[in-house]
Amino acid sequence: MTKYIIKGGKPLHGEIEISGAKNAAVAIIPAALMVSGTCRIENIPQISDVTMLLNIIEMMGGDIRTVDRHTMDIDCAGVKSVPADFELMHKIRASYYLIGALLGRFGRAEVAMPGGCNFGGVRPIDQHIKGFIAMGADVSVRNGMVVAQAKGGRLRGASIYLDVVSVGATINLMLAASLAQGVTYIENAAKEPHIVDLANFLNSMGADIRGAGTNVIKIRGVNELRGGFYSTIPDQIEAGTYLAAVAGAGGEVLIKNVIPKHLNCITVKLEEMGVSVKKFGDSVLVSSDGKLRATNFKTMPYPGFPTDMQPQLATILCLAKGTSTVTEGVWDNRYKYTDELLKMGANIRVEGRTAVIDGVSEFTGAHIKACDLRAGAAMVIAGLCANGTTEVTGVNYIERGYEDIVGKLRAVGADIISVQCADDENEVRDIV
Image (tube, rainbow, N blue to C red):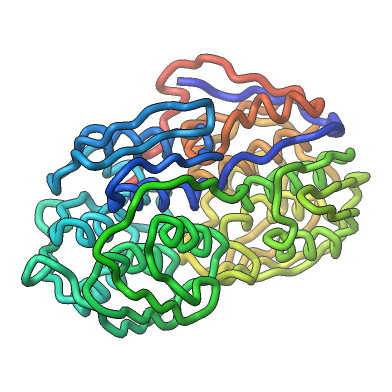
């Protein structure tokens, strides 16, 4: 096990290159199960969630060849619709995308209930199941496994209205519908950039998907998807995390390999806080003197402020002058990390889905832990901003979604190292 040791108070200067999007990669890799032929996927981030998904596909019979550090050839011709390793599937949220992919290709799927970060209980998949049933599948949950069987061996197109905007359900139903018989409409669909990226990947392999990025997606099922080449989009949340780190710690950093439009919902709030953001074709220059102003925000589905950036922005608002209000509009319980910020001197109180933050002059280094992926990134930001030394445990969560976060931060002047530690130092409750 490892932990991060951070000596704070150092402004950041230089360049950071953003990796491929985690949320796109963990949808596109299961989609490769549906393809007859080899998919060459470029710009794949080297993170533990991706590694686990690739291991699952290999255990199911997929042939995965590494071309270079961020490029994989995936050939799933030999995959059969069999249960994959329960323990691996149970560790990550994206395991549930295997349901849609396997149902689409084989008409049958048996997949563990999803894991991932724990925001107050097991992630609901009721909207996924609703859609599969509408397309003609029988679905049941047995011993922690979702078992789905298409009547007649193949799904049928259907009109599906999602009761809530759900990224996971939108992706899963897009996967299943791509090889279904007939036309499927997904209404009240999520619009996130990685949903558009998945649609573009599937279309490049021969699918017929229109409307991704709007609230109605139309999928005309095809009989086969063929192999091809694709490169995933840059990671919007990784880029936003480093923007927040520079805003809080101070300095000037060029964030490279981004799609600036995807960052608008984040950069607008940073500018309200007094941070300078200059956008170029595929990069963003962020500069800050570390003197921040309070602001308010509410997380919402894209193009609103992303829930996955809530902990990072709330952390630097703890150092902003004035009182800020943060409202979590997506998850019921995403404020567990605030107990760690209190250890560092933050003045933050949580009332239901709202956090009220009174800015303080500084953080003091402390022993803190990551309780989920994005909260873990927020703990790193807090350590960069703090006076003194901060030790962050539970970093396995962080490495689920950030490629070489220590190396990237060290390259811009941060004093952060990763060291071995005893297992009991990293005791963070396992996710269910």
